[in-house]
Length: 105
Image (cartoon, rainbow, N blue to C red):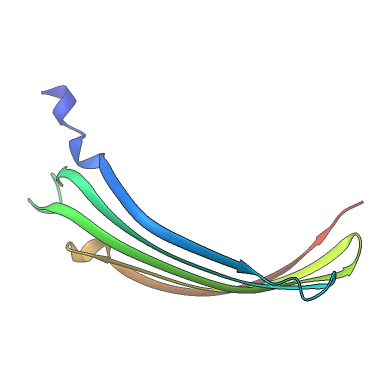
């Protein structure tokens, strides 16, 4: 009985991802990433419903890296993520933008 308690945490994955990086020159490096993943859980969720959870998630990133000089790099990235599920509690859509820098001695 104890071994069966966490069966809903087991899952199988199938997905695809594609990344493109353009080296315009040694200074500018734009990129794009896209991924899609399907997930099927092994057993019914014991709390939220008596149904085997199935999810589909998609992610897209667009970014730019700018090497200002050898030890200083600036970057910016926009991200869109979406997760669909047969259990509404696990669905979401999120967008974010982040920018930063990296300094190396």
